[in-house]
Image 1 (cartoon, rainbow, N blue to C red):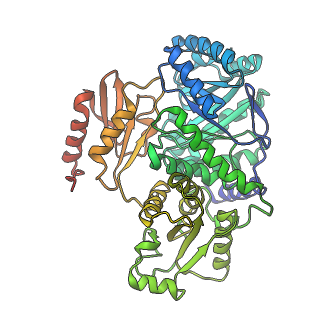
Image 2 (cartoon, one colour):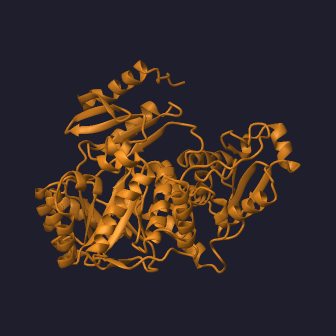
Image 3 (cartoon, helix red, strand yellow):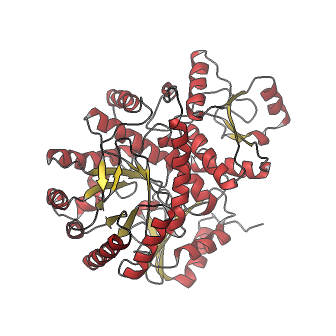
Amino acid sequence: MDDEKKERLRRAWAEATAGNRRRSREVKIGSVAIGAGHPVAVQSMTDRNTNDTEACIAQTGRIRQAGGRIVRLTTQGLREAESMRIIAAEVRRRWPDTALVADVHFVPQVADAVAAFADKVRINPGNYNDRGGSFEALLEKCRRSGAALRIGVNHGSLSPKMVGLYGDTPEGMVESAMEYLRICRREGFDRVVISMKSSNTRVMVHAYRMLVAAMHLEGMDYPLHLGVTEAGSGLEGRIKSAVGIGALLADGVGDTIRVSLTEPPENEIPAAQAITAHFAAATASEGTFRRGQEALREPFAYSRRLTASVGRIGGDNPPLLRSELLADEADALHDGRIAVIEAVGPHPVEEWREAIVRMDAAGDRRPVILKRTYPSCDRTELAMQAAADFGVMFIDGLADGIWIESAAGTPQADTDSIALDILQASRARMSKTEFISCPGCGRTLYALQDTLAVVKERLSHLKGLKIAVMGCIVNGPGEMADADYGYVGAAPGRITLYRGKEPVRRNIPQEDALDALIALLRSDGRWTEPE
């Protein structure tokens, strides 16, 4: 991308996010309206085979009971499309305020079929582009039925054309989306939602920002669906999701979200609600919400702020926790050679950015530790709030240290663990194994949640490695583009192992697959025995 285009996009990003919330048009997904100032909607996806209609109906009910009014189901073939028709009829009878989304991969004819009765159809333009089919015909079917359309661009599954032109980059993701958005505008179809997902929070945030800027330049105001793909499970998965989603909500960007966890899908709803509630409280307060944007010298790529090093903090050193400072570094903190910026108001990102802008204007290059004290005594709530606040600052390379405190007396070991997970999720510092795992869907070919638990138990001591555990070939290897190794469902009871994007052992019986992965790690010199 040339410098002139970058500058146009920077200005467009700043203009589009100048208010408390990015302006987007209203799009109705069944009875659920998103965009145009509506509260950010939360959603989830069933993980049962769509042909098991009773299981999918029951799971949809549990998602709705948890508070999710938008539910997605995989429809990989015409048989699944017909099953979804049956599911839709029963769901609308039992829970008429619930919107159903058909998730289509690979086969455009399936998108054409489900457009007749789904509230929204989700397509991946990379798949659609490669498989033929008429996008304009799909738009006409959606127009007639009243269905919305989600153009879901995923990092790692771009079309060969886009990869050839831009590589597997945020710019390629944006151009893939814009190609289809221009067709939607040309055809006069405006019930469109866009997503730009990745398991890498930096890629995800940079792609959404660039898309917002690109749409703004062309006068587009389509709403955005936010999510971090393959976030994992437990507290780590919640923190990773809060880092990526929170980075965008902090700038008023996002109209509906999904927290993708390798857990029962109804568990995703309270996690998503915790993130939206955190920002709903902030945006409801008075005052200007968007000061300090000048701190983002490079909104669309990682750029570490230049600071002096004091011992092991600042400069090119990875960020440290306050509790990790050695005696001489702690002395530097107390005598002011290390700056502490403490956020005390409802908009911590704004406070931190503003302070950094002032430091830059004064030529102050001291290392910066960001600090915030949280009142919550619930560890999960504390973790998600801190992740949503701090994550974007480390995605943007604006800080050298992190200091989380709890007014309720949360043990330091817990706040330190949370801080390390935030740094890892924002790709600022790798301190342990990262597990990239999909949440599962109707395509999943094995017991994903149980398998992830076993893989974690055997491999969690491998500091710095990224291991992907994926349910099927749709999500792997493309969606695990950032992983070092992958464990991917290939057929019922069969696993294929990947090194990066390359398959190295195909169709291994599942009972042998984990030992085979460990053997691969040994042969690559990446294995160490647990202590």
